[in-house]
Length: 65
Image (cartoon, rainbow, N blue to C red; front, side):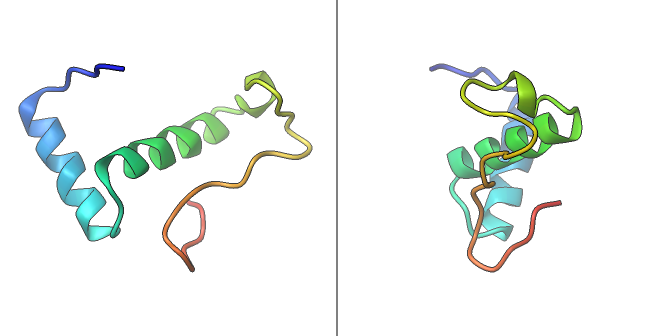
């Protein structure tokens, strides 16, 4: 998958991922999962339902936002 981002946004995302000790890809997945959960989109995800959402991936010991 190719994702085109403005350079300044990509740099900000990389810096944030680094501060969270995650790869850029892992940080983007985490942010998308958190965003979808906040929108209440869990029930729309394949194989998921809002009663038993999939766990968020993150660094060990971190809690979801």
